[in-house]
Image 1: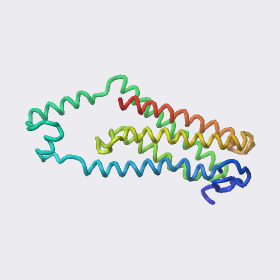
Image 2 (image 1 turned 90 degrees about the vertical axis):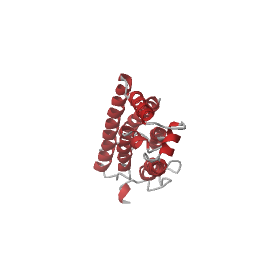
Image 3 (image 1 turned 180 degrees about the horizontal axis):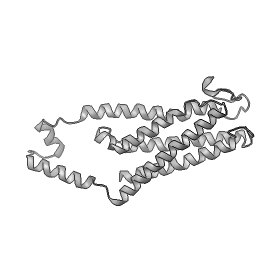
Length: 218
């Protein structure tokens, strides 16, 4: 397959060379990108649902339901907006966490690009790994816009699920490559030992992103 050229174990899911492991092509084409597909599907579904449930600003009845009072006056509405604005102002700690969050996203993007480039230079095919870049960019946009300003219900939990799932699937990838042997592809432009190191770094970054996602949602 063009997605996984020159991979002797075949497409999979089971390797032709090692019956006890999953092929690297299956991991790069199905398992790891699956996190992105599920994330994007759920994100779009929640965005559509949230948009349909948003109250119309010109409806006094819906405004009353939103603020949970019998009668809403213009003064109360302004006070409510002012309060929300004050609560939403980021503290110094939050700013620091957000800065670290985005820096890690940039670093993770570069790590993914590095893996893709090295696989390409070794003529092994890149599978569907570029989809991970789409997930990283989308998650950054969701965090920056606070779930498109509240249209995506539970967006922080969705981002958290993305980081955890990517860490787990890449962990499976390391486990399978370790079974294949760290000496595999030795002498090539991308030995298995180097790929294991790169993926391990990415798992660590995903773990920190998950922690920051929780911290930022508090």
